[in-house]
Length: 431
Ligand SMILES: Cc1cc2nc3c(=O)[nH]c(=O)nc-3n(C[C@H](O)[C@H](O)[C@H](O)COP(=O)(O)OP(=O)(O)OC[C@H]3O[C@@H](n4cnc5c(N)ncnc54)[C@H](O)[C@@H]3O)c2cc1C
Picture (tube, rainbow, N blue to C red):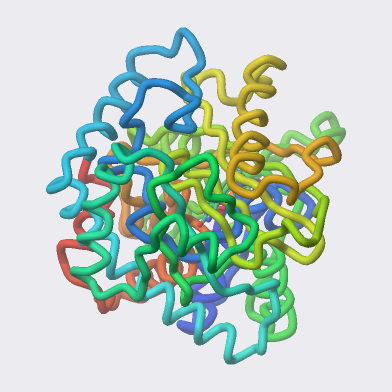
């Protein structure tokens, strides 16, 4: 089949790779000049999510204070945004958390295998580093973390629960004063550079052939007619006055993998998904003192702030801001941006003092798409030739490789090798 993939982020690139591997011809349409310029650019480095990374569960927004939960609420958000948060906080219940994680788990394992296969096939080097140490400050938060530890034990995920002294002995850059409750070490999990990975996969596809990348092209709408699917392109700046003809790319199927740009495209087709765009921040800071720099990635488990080392710099990601969806394309405003970046600076100072030169850090912000039940939206939607792959939230990076495989199987008319309730839990019509 000729398949059009809308979006050149990690999800679009991984989907194109898997579709090509399944024997399809692919055209990736991306509005930017290259791949990995959206949320993919700002990733925090964590490759695959543990139960401590998913954006639901007992520790997620358990406190109302941003200094404690790591999430800033912009004043004045509207009804749909409030409803969205209400639904997410229902998953604080340990049982609901466990149920939802169980549905996500097969996708994580599929992604692990898919990534390992891609890595081995092409000998990819993309700043991989082993080891993530999750740290928890207060005894109360430690208590709230226990359901996640139960899940780790249930699924036999390799990990070590450490006392503060053991954390400091393992990672010399973490001080035991002020006191903290403990840590969880994943010595087999990894951090890596997501945009670099996406670019390497694109290069591989360029070399192999069969995948065409169309950059600088914005899809304005999707057309679904019988057994055909096509996309209309918005006029390029400056070209509008010359011709009234609309550029159309024809195909047999369309996969929407356009991050938060997916929502308006699907809404124009009559599919309104209750996903919410969430603004996140990151800082890339030079190492200040080598002797204070961590040798594994450090994650503030409750505030969900990840600090990963990449060569001579630290990548610090988190600082989410909840706001109305209608405001997401407008600038956030200086004071909220400062507040979000301050959370990142403070977490770095608290857990690894002296490691980063925050005053020289480069700030960045991006938008990720989160679903109210914490799970991505993957599969067929609305029409036999329309497919979606979006809403991977804070865990989109490694999971994209498995999600791309799921989509490729479904497009090819095969049943993916994951449990039926996982597939059902990802469907667009579940809401
Ligand atoms: C600061 C930050 C830190 C993060 N940290 C992590 C982490 O540590 N680990 C992790 O797993 N995940 C992390 N995430 C989440 C992860 O980055 C995302 O889940 C993932 O990048 C989503 O990929 P995507 O391809 O769906 O979206 P994007 O990367 O946003 O790509 C979508 C693409 O679609 C294009 N597009 C949109 N509309 C159109 C249109 N109409 N026509 C043509 N092109 C269009 C956009 O230009 C964009 O390039 C983080 C996100 C942020 C913002």
